[in-house]
Image (cartoon, rainbow, N blue to C red):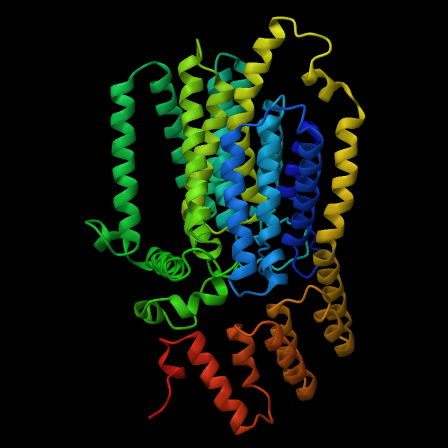
Length: 547
């Protein structure tokens, strides 16, 4: 089952559908995540009496998912959108549930090193695809608005971060095999080329992730070699530097004059809005993946004039703050405690090893590198899935070493552990059942995206309206469709679509704003629209009541 799950995770990273879906990047990844998570869930249920789970891991995961369920049911957001997530992102309750099922499965899996092998090959494939994009030979028929390498993730920042993690893995392989001339001859140029690609992506995220990954190797080796004073000195110094840097992003501390500008200042605006959301909705959040819906409401005044009032975001650009804003404070607390527990496990493992375990060192560097990325970036399914895999592998790798030591003492043939793994149907049944359930739950996302793309290609208004109304509906798709209808003088159809959209998404700023474009809008409707726009964007003077 470990191999099957690992391959599925690799497919999540590289799967795209530019020839068939309106959103070319995320629907297929979402379906594969559903298949993977559901397969893991079925496996966990079947093996619950045969495998010893880490009780703390179970507690932290249960608290997180319970808090996410509270956010789904009591935040007041659309249940459908809260379950599936915002269009183009799909980080609703379902996705977080599937990620945690994957984490729990990896934590009990054998041969966790296979996961690293899958990541290495996935990274290599993404690296080669990036080279094609760099030379303008991308075979995919999508419009690359960034005019840069975007890999299989659709954004240069995501791809830069992924290449930063791949560079970290290459460094681990190089450290482990530096005495082998053939390996070095292959790995060293690959690492240098990956670094060059990161630099050409025009995104600092990859550099940041790669640097944190390399520094993690350094502190790992210091701790492993018992240089505790140097280790703790570097950890304290690094924590201090990161703290004052993060403070500067939001305009605080001694570095604020140097860092609180440009895109970093915008990121600070997003962070401050997330903090305001969390403070106002401490125990429910604003709803799964609803940050973008409420950003205008919670942004501070300076954010409106940084560039202009139309500059917004659908993410805090910080995974930790996204937890607090979207799902509530307990989700953030449980995740931070989970990370702390993982660090405890890492240090315990290092102290117990006789010599440096380079595979474990690489895993730890990737785990820390992802957390660095998570600190400064929005979520993307093809990237975030690895964070949960690395986290689960921290626990699974420890389990593997323990199992190996038991095996060396000649485990009994009737061992429960052997019963789980020697039954050939034990891995096949979860995969088949998980695939069926996963497709049933996530298939509507792909189907609606396929139908909408097909309708747009045919340029048939009736088909476009029908496709936009396919369940689950999206406020973004409804708004875009209404814009098309208005521009083609189909006023009544566009107005009807917007009115129905507002009934389902009453807090959609874009739908209310687009309603103003209806040619025969009444004075009463206009007054209502202005009132709603002011409610949703209270600091914007354009919508302030007159007189």
